[in-house]
Image (cartoon, rainbow, N blue to C red; front, side, top):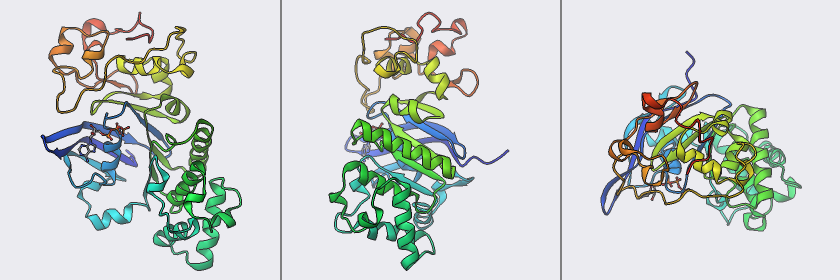
Length: 341
Ligand SMILES: Nc1ncnc2c1ncn2[C@@H]1O[C@H](COP(=O)(O)OP(=O)(O)OP(=O)(O)O)[C@@H](O)[C@H]1O
């Protein structure tokens, strides 16, 4: 069998806090193939960012990998030294964040920073590095790239800054690009342009994209595979088509139901838009049983008592819900048609 580009296996991550160690990602497993786009979606605090930051060990001082493996091309990144990981970071695996200024230094020109990213990971120097920098700016759709080379980041618009960051991220042709809410800070039109840009770049290069978002619209636009997280756990995983056609977990149903632009796509004709009632539980005060049960319209006794396992629910699909696990209710949502909650 071919080794997948990225294989996360039973990863649990916690933080040391004033109230002791809190687990924020629990037993997460996922596999990403070359050229695939995996979207991790969920509300704020579900553990999406922590899961993705663990890959490059960007958790900060109080972060603790409690268990699991993160294999990149077969090698467990958790066994790499800080020095080895620094080589991989930015060269084989690049990461971009919501706020482009976290990756840009305000006191240096775009050209300076881009050339630095280029010379760090390749043999290109001098004139050659400058020409490649201009070429990268052109690839990410920045007009007048020669002149933007001399600009300071603050003189660019948010969208142009994120394009510049993407240019830096792709300079070394990484095999894996982690994008953590890359368009959240941008207005809607620019969001769409940046998503198109990422797609276009991926088609040209075969890069695998791990995209973190709270926005199912972004998921619908981008994902091959969708991982839905709730309170630190995967609650559903499926290819994008199946997930939108027939979401199995009541939480996923609620997310889709709350999306205006997907109403027609999912065949839900209800005019009312409902958000999921309630909020994500605090991770140090999780409810007993299923973590979602206090917000779930289908909640039964078992849901209040014990945690449901993540089970296979057809081809390439996983779901963590007692209603899908119990033999007596193999089609638990047949009558709900996605109108949960
Ligand atoms: N350095 C830290 N110390 C303690 N707790 C942390 C730390 N960083 C994150 N957390 C906690 O981990 C949990 C998951 O955070 P994470 O940022 O992964 O969520 P998320 O799903 O990405 O949401 P968001 O969209 O808000 O970033 C949250 O409860 C958060 O408070």
